[in-house]
Image (cartoon, rainbow, N blue to C red):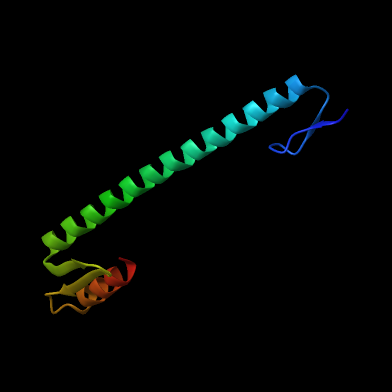
Amino acid sequence: MIISSEITGKEYKSVEACLADEKAFKEKQEAEKKAKEEHQKKLDEAYKKAIDACEDYLKLSGFDFKRTENGYTIKSNSDDELDRMFAEILQLML
């Protein structure tokens, strides 16, 4: 008799070994899924912190900016060419 698992794709010598391996396989998949979700949550939180820090910097630096559906509009109130270039780069990044 051949005992094979559709879940793991492997063959086993006993039903017990098959069931045990399937259980371990499912637990591993669930742990990987949970780790991926936790990583995404941390990534989203870090992104929010970075955006908030960028907004704080822009406010303090005297840039005009608005959050829109499609990102940001950012303008420099300065006559300095570097400030205008920086505003354009930030708008492209955000």
